Structure formats: C-alpha cells, structure tokens
Length: 466
Ligand code: NAP
Ligand code: MG
Image (cartoon, rainbow, N blue to C red):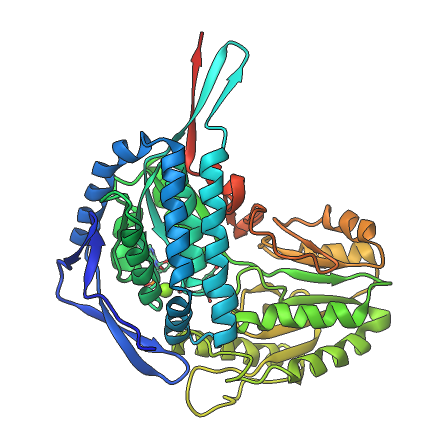
C-alpha cells in the first residue's frame, strides 16, 4: 500500500496551499527511505488555522451534545473503515511492525473515538447544586501539539474529547509522523464536521508548534512530548493565564514483591518495554526485584528479551537522533558500572534506526539509566532489600506517570501501589483501560487524558444562582 501525502494544510474545512515554500521529508526509519513530503507550516499558517477555529467555535459550542456525539461517531466509523491504510501509514513513518500497527496504532484510536462519541451523548454538562445550576462549557480554541510515538492515539486522545466538549482544534503533529495526521484530517473531513472545527498545520516544533502554543487566539494548549518542551509551553501558557495540559515523560517502576509469580512479572514487564521499541512514555523501564530472587529475575529477563528480534518483533527507533540518544544511554550505563546481560550499543542491523533490546543488571538508583527517560528498548533491573526500600527506589525519580506491582495477593500489590507517587499502576498485569484517566504525578505532567476525566480538561464551569 502506498502512502499518499497531502501538499497543503487542512484549514477551515478544506486542503489549502501552505503559505510558506518549504517542505519536510518523511522518512521510514526501517529502511531510511523518504516516503513523502509535507509542508512546513509558518506562523502565518498557524494564524489562518486559529482564525478558522475561532470562527467555528460559537457554532460548534452551541451544537447540541447529541449532534456532536453523532459526528464523533462518524469519525470513529471513518477510522474503522480506513484501519488498514492507517496501520500501513504508521508502519511507513514510525517503522512499527505491522501487527503492532494494526492492533494498537490503528485499533486503539477507534476505541477512544468511540468512547467520546458515547461520553458526548451522556456527560452531565449541567448540574444542580443547591440554588445554582452549574454549566460545563467548552474552554474555546484548543492548540494540540502531539508526539510521534503513538501518532494517531495521541491525536485522538486530544481531539475527540475537545470536540465532545464543544471546543474547536488546531493540531500540530510531530514532524516525524505527519502522514497519519493528514489521514486523520481526511477522516474528519469525510465525517462531515463543520468547517473550522478541526484544523491541521504540519511543521516544525520550534516554528509552527511554538507559534501555536503562544497564539493569543488559543485558549488551551494540550501538549504531549518531552519534559523540556513541556516546561517551556507551560511557562508561556502561565504568563498568558491560559489553560494547559501536559503529558510528559516517565521512568516507571515494575515492582515485583516477594511471593509474586516471578516469571510472569518478568515476561510481562519485558513485553511492556519492548512494545513500540521502548518508545512509550508509560513503559516500565525499571524492574525492581528482591535481593533473594535477583539473579533468577536477571536470567529470566535475558531469556525473555532474546525473543524480541530487531526487524521482526521490535521495530526501529523513529529517527537517527533518537537512535544516537538511546545508544548514548547504553554506553553511559556501562560507564557507570551497570552489567549488560542482553543487547548493547552496537547496531544490530545494517539499515534502519535499530537498537538491540538491552537489559542492564546491577543498576543502582542514582545511575543515569535509572533516572532519565531513555525512550528505547532498554530495561534496568534494580535490587531492593525490603518493601520500604522498594518504595523509596520506585518513587526516587522526578517522574510519576505509570507503574506496575506484582504480589501473591492483589490486595498486597494495591496497598503498595497506593504509596507510589504515580498516576496509574497495573496490579498483577491488569489490562490497559481506555476509559481510565491517564496522566502524571510530579514532572510527568499536568492534567489527565481519556474517559470522562479527559473530557473535563476541555470544560470550564459557569454557575447561575436562582
Ligand atoms: P518533543 O520535541 O517534545 O516533541 C513533541 C511535540 O512538540 C512535537 O510535535 C514537536 O515538534 C513539538 N515541539 C518541539 N519543540 C517545540 C516548541 N519549542 N514549541 C512547541 N512545540 C514544540 O519531543 P521529541 O524531540 O520528539 O522527543 C524527545 C524526547 O521526548 C524523547 O526521547 C522522549 O524522552 C520524550 N517524548 C515523550 C513522549 C511522551 O509520550 N510523553 C513522546 C515523545 C517524546 P517536532 O516534531 O517538530 O519536534
Ligand atoms: Mg523535537
């Protein structure tokens, strides 16, 4: 299947020529071939898109929730109808193995869009509190800035709740994965949303992204990406007294308590990190194991990782810069005294931005590889002496996005999880829930996505007293 790139921006309900001359190549990280070009948005393109979104806002905000729900349902159906094309596009620009692209990258957004079609129709946008009626009203125009790691999921997790709330949107997707965003714009168009309700400007973060984040016509900025850029966007929004939602990095702990099913905890933990080549903000990249079973866990992890062959079950990293970054972290781990039990910094394949799935043992909590987000298929195994020690290590980073706890009894694991400074914890392998709030404690972010909590981010309240 060939991937078709659009040469314009989607603004005000139509594909319009970009206002600048420059284009950006889109590269397939599996073979380093260019698969298309997209326009590099300028501040003038962002201006045009924000104007279109502002113009569309009053009408969309006043559209009955049931009608908004029906249109979001049509977007969901469009995503389902084009599932194969979406998966092929994610494979082409992110390098995701086809099975992962179909199940997760194309599959999850259908579920999330469907959940917001339902929530838009059922959410209580009005409630009585004593002698008051409290209305939940849309915040206004949303500037959405998304990363490349889950290109369509990150878009839908912002756009669907924004639309459900009655907000209008301007999206600036990651420069590495703009084709999936263009496909989404086409789905929105075909679903028949009113002109200007959703707008797309492709381009570079420091140009188009920055213009959008600082635009005075934007009422709320929703950003997912690095903590460094998130901090900058938060500062600009704060100065303008503007709402902001930040989904930033993570360094999540997979805590295996004594008595847990060790083989299961290790295998699921390894799978969690290897999925999407480790490019998942909520990945459990630190495995915490009791001293008594430490060496057993290390050899189980090394065996598990051997089943993830680069180019087969594990795709490449998104670009050459991320490859160098991740290899740099592996080198740093060795320099700081950690022991490599699988993988390493050498390139496993001749072509493509591949890194070997890597497991480090003898990692101590203060090491760089135990503190910083690596964003690659790299696992650090840390040793703890007792539960308090495990908790100290689990909570001992600036991040707090996700985590896992394993124990013989779920109650034991849940009690430990309640003491963790983190936004979500999977108990004994609990499944991902697309309706559960997703977001971070500490420097992992501000705000929540998904489900009703995700919808409320795009609402502000007004109370009328009678
Ligand atoms: P990033 O620069 O933060 O990118 C995220 C989004 O922000 C992209 O759309 C990016 O555009 C845009 N952006 C960049 N600079 C901007 C600015 N000054 N103003 C407004 N928008 C801006 O992240 P990255 O460089 O792609 O990845 C670096 C690291 O971030 C990764 O190694 C990982 O640790 C972390 N990360 C985390 C997540 C997550 O889900 N939490 C996702 C991706 C990356 P461009 O695409 O043009 O840069
Ligand atoms: Mg960047």
